[in-house]
Length: 265
Image (cartoon, rainbow, N blue to C red; front, side, top):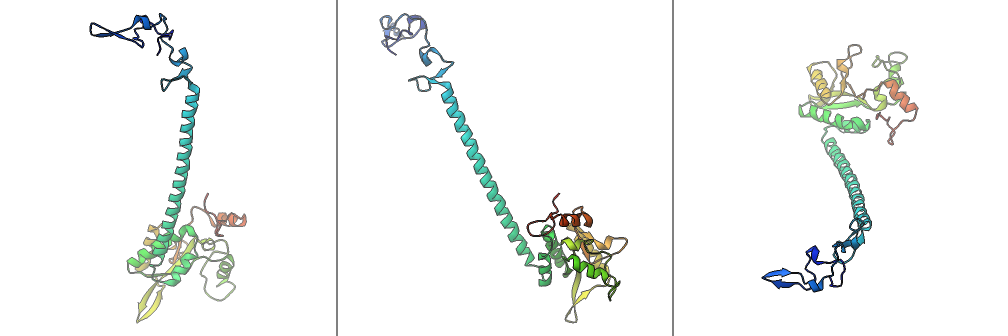
């Protein structure tokens, strides 16, 4: 401050530029201070409109606020960008880990035929199918998937068997009426080595109940629980859709990019 500053005065209790010592105390130099009564030379006498963060000059507070707020906004935008990038990276890493885990678990299945048929199922049930087969395998039950995805034409041919073509009746479902037609069902049979020969065990015995319980454990509906047409080799996941609803989706083109029906509601 200079002694020419008209806003400094003795009545304000400000010492000014040339204070003096009296009786050991610092006192104002009356001759260095003009007798003005307003202390607010600070912020150009308007502290509501201006700020003086350095003590050197006044700045409109809006300039400071805009700068601070813009910095905060940019920080928030950058944080959002980094968060989105991190989330995308985490999702990609998770998907890669899941894919690697699936392939690793799939390769542990004893039977290459079963591996191929699992790969042909609807992707939404592939993981559960692998877990089911491996769980049975851990119990000493080697299951082979004998039928997985089945086209509508193949379903019609099976329905004709025992009716208009030779053979016994093995299904009551026409084309489009079976969850096989949407990759959401498969049939299994236990393979046992008997006298050195791998043999399919179709007969009903206590093993089927154990197999059925394992399938239910992984979310599958078991045909052995049906009260009408009991189908012990059969397992399916419906996702609360009827086959009519699934067929309507197929006919409407409501499909995934891999060609399977979309089961997301």
